[in-house]
Length: 356
Image: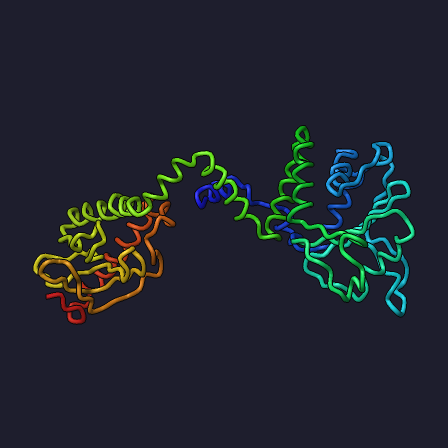
């Protein structure tokens, strides 16, 4: 998934005009975009398609002729707020489909105002209507705002995460012949995934779909997780490490049964005549908590006694979670650079690092 994300970045797929202009969490801008897309006369050129999809998602059924006559208003003023706060204010988005009204109160980060939802309910109560409370995850309004109104009875909670995502996906499918509109809709969909924290969730869904399709392979891989990790470490770290030692004329030390992780989870380098070595040691036998420093191996090379230890800043755990970096050689290069830096310090300060 990390590789796929990097490829998407390289292709410019993460370039998003909503993010660049810092509009991703601006409720007013979201309302403007949604209202324009719902407007049959909007410049999107999709006609009633977005409006029809939206009303169908809400479970409402309108004739196409009525949808074409829909009037969309944004920040619609319904009067000054009364002293008891039960009337007045302005509605984020108001749809008028003949005599039917759809009121959308849009909340992303802003809090509720006193009796705010009640005011909108009082405005449309005598008319056929649907009152929507739109938030990122579909949460209920505060009691201070609803003031006795009941969800499902007086109003309906909808979310960017569910209804709006579904709606934008519908619009994407129906804008197949309009590449410019599709690109904008895709960017907006990505923005919604960001503000609802569902980017990784969708990535996992895609992964799970693949795992489900090849469930037998998935099962075999899960059973071989331990063995696969050892395979990765040996092929992409230890083998290149041994070749590097031979090239540099270093002596190579591998902890006893290192590959089996039974004991001696360490490896290192030294120069001829050294009693000590520069080593990597893991405090856990499952390649977790990686340290490096100066140590002295015992005769059997089963353990190493570290006299100077430093914790790795990167790659603390060599699990399959970093398989991409292991396979690419990034982990080996990181360890090699640590060893070379330590070797340079020893050469420059022999009195400080007694290796004999």
